[in-house]
Length: 223
Image (cartoon, rainbow, N blue to C red):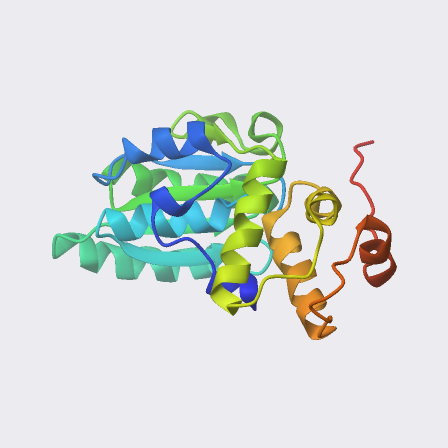
């Protein structure tokens, strides 16, 4: 998928999260565990990968939706061996709020020893979804929905990669960014869809023609 091909490889390539990237730049030496809290498509997984790669740490990814204590123990066993050899493991846990209290508590001993460096990602408020013992060992970094400028920058990268600009007016490009609703991954999915249509280079599509090609994304609402 285009979103995977264009995934940033360094902090300098990440757009739309200046406060978070500045905080993470100070952690490139490999110390400190964090939880990344933000909506989908804002770069949580990307930032975790960059953090591990630039610190020279072994990167292991788990999902709290699919993996439980048994998988954690397997990762801890391998991490212990690497730690004895002088290599720290960066453990990325996606949807970490899905772990129950027992699963969260299982992380505490290896965090205390420094065997792993934890980076969690969550769309839920960590103050409510993570227990106090784990939360006290993490710094919470808040990611915000990507603004229009960031989304347009991603759009330009996609066009450069595909070596063909989309035949859109400036107003339609802005409308495309609005449709993405702050989600960079969704924007790139829309871009892929437009390229599949093999649109003619002329005339350029305006906002109404663009809307006719793409179904508008439903906005997200809380309770």
